[in-house]
Structures are given as C-alpha cells and as structure tokens.
Image 1 (cartoon, one colour):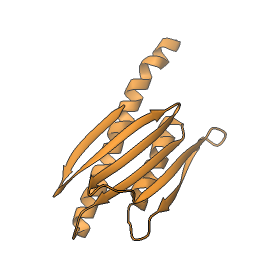
Image 2 (cartoon, rainbow, N blue to C red):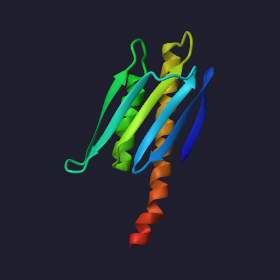
Image 3 (cartoon, rainbow, N blue to C red):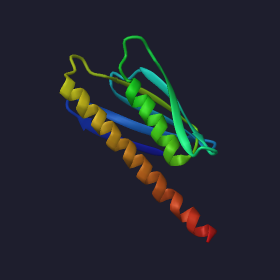
Length: 127
C-alpha cells in the first residue's frame, strides 16, 4: 500500500505500510533488519485521543520510533496500528541516531500526507 526509502548516512531505512482490514501494519527497518520494538496504537472515539504501548527487545533502542509511530498513525487514521521497528548500524554516533529519527519522522509524515490525500476523494463523494 505504501513504501518509502531514505538514505541516512551509511544506511538506507525503509517504511512500509500495509492495510489489514481497517487497521494498519507498519515496518520501519534499516541496516541489519530485525525486530527491535513493537508498538500497538489505538484510537478512542469517545475521547478523540490516540495512545500506544510498546514492547522492546532487550538491548534495543527502537522504543521511541515504534511508540511514536503507532500513536501518530492511529491519531491520523483513527484506526488501530501495529508498528514494528528494527534498525541497526554498527558504531552509530548520537548525531547519526538523531538523523535516523528525523528521517523516520519525515517518512511517517509522508505516509500521513498520503493517507489524507487518498482519503479526501471519499469525503467529497459523500457531499
């Protein structure tokens, strides 16, 4: 359904989205791909708020990417989302980590823009 790649320093990261019924499954991978963290995003119609919970593999640091990704997707789509993150680069510096997080955020914003653009014709058809 949606695929985007970005070269960030020495590695390439990829964001993939798949629709499963009304819900979404995302993978954010790069370098030596793996499952580092998995988050579940939920949207509560009553409160109009999104929340997310995360499980992180010991020794991995993808928690923020998965947690924020699931929350942002559920907020934008008002659907349940599962977000799997696994990016590995040997000897990564703090600056490289910031660049990867920034690129991942931009890629997620690209998905949200894609989703909103794709969703608009259906709204116009209702009028």
